[in-house]
Image 1 (cartoon, rainbow, N blue to C red):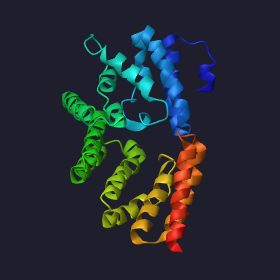
Image 2 (cartoon, one colour):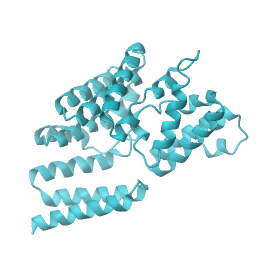
Image 3 (cartoon, helix red, strand yellow):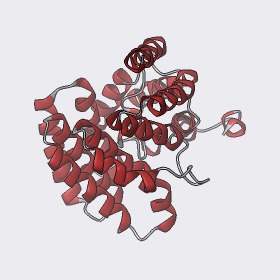
Length: 276
């Protein structure tokens, strides 16, 4: 990508490289750099909307919306995509981004989220042959249900997402995404303090990630181990998992990293106090 970016490129290729760069920064654990890539795409697309695709391909998924500094460029990009909906030849990728629910989720706008999820579900039903839309729609429905406190419904939607992933018929893609997607269940079971359900996930989620899986699974494994340990009252194991996550997360450059470190350290001190 560095070599390509140094070349003299046509605008569509240059802006597409910005999209690829955003994904690379995310995958390499440098999320703070994603916002500038998205902002540059928005600037270019405001001058020429045809540059939105393929730069935004697959960006309608949840992965980037919660990163530091992305809310404003994401809002601009969604508005640009929405303006393209009535124009002939608009790609399904642009339609998907125009219906992205994750901005509403991260804003904490529950009423807006419900409306957005319903609109996204209608889009997914119209474009039911696109597996990525089906998976994204089920996950949006799951998190909307979780935000409303309906954890049973959230788990049901997430299991439907996993079913959709298993039915893709693309073993390589399923291998990359299945355990990462399953980790959503950990969040829902933790919210419900369902120790037995979390124990059942441990054998599947505990192995180290393979070469084709997302590296964040190492941190996710530690999170699950620590949560199980807390619910079991094993404070030493919970502390070890917390320290592992602290060492992993702080160097990544997430927003408010000092605050996050302070919170984790405070939690560990609280564990020490309980143990004493």
